[in-house]
Amino acid sequence: MKKRNVCKKFFAIAAAAALSLSLCACGTGNPQNSQTADENSRQPTEDKTYTVAIIKQMDHASLDEIANAVATELDQIAADNGVTIKYTITSGQNNDQTILKQLGDQAVADKVDAIIPIATTAAQIAALCAEDTKTPVVFAAVSYPDDPSVNLTGIDYVTGTSDALNASFIIDMMLAQNPDIKMVGLLYSLSEPNSAPPIADAKAYLESKNIPYVEQTANTNDEVIAAAAALAAEGVDAIFTPTDNVIQSAELAIYESLIDAGIPHYTGADSFVRNGAFTACGVNYTELGKRTASLAYDVITQGMDGVEDYYLMEGGIITVNTETAAALDIDYSVFKDMGTVVEVVTTED
View 1 (cartoon, one colour):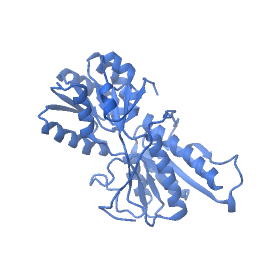
View 2: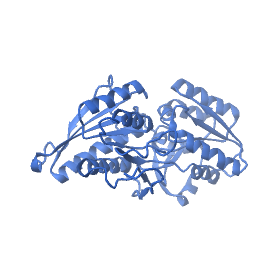
View 3: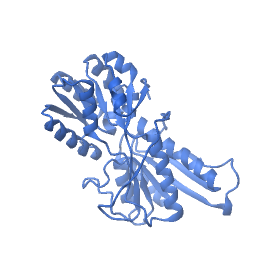
View 4: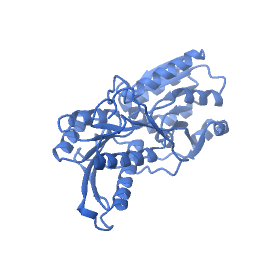
């Protein structure tokens, strides 16, 4: 595997498709939704059977969508190649690192052929769990794997997909919709390593345009509610949140108050928008899940030789909540010249 400063490969994502948002239930952190791919298809050639542990950092729409897409693609890969792929989908529940460590250790003890952790903290813990056995770790949706605070590059048994965010572009979306913005709110969690780089980028970009900003951080649902209220009290014209799992899990609790305050919430993932935020620009998580599953199968069957540290998925998909836009009396037609626009409504899942 190539080490640091590796040239990342870019994969174009097709126009947005209908995205699956069904939740994957989780109980006490024990594996659930255990499924066998290709159970009803032809018998596998040479009786090849592989096992995969899919570990979500927590339960929310984006990570559920990725997990479902990984599972669906593994089923398809099994059918196409005449093999059996057995997998489990588990969750760290509320971002519980103790549970994530237990799940990673169990996957290694079960001698799975690959671990697919979804999101940054889950990936970091899975890589640590697999350090002695060198069990392949193929992460999904780690925004900045080569950031020093994340440190997931240069490891010969680790690869995956990145959903790195273009924060400057989202600020440009704000300005296209409202050129008279006077102040921007930044809402994120300090416990999310993937939030730090895009927040830093957003600050630098706003400063370059002489636009003041105020920030609020939160690590629990109650703190997110209080932080959103504080930003509203500051009189911000818009709020930016990157692909932050903590804030996303609380979006349903804040979107109505932000609408009441007349504040559009600009975010880094469509799951926010489906939970009431105004808009997002990012990658297609179904496509990211499919790419991750394909990469995992390649690693299982061909090894890690020639595999990059990670693969950056192309973004540019703008998702707009039409109900929220109407409630805010916002004309979002300006976004049609900036990327592919997908319209959704609020779903409480």
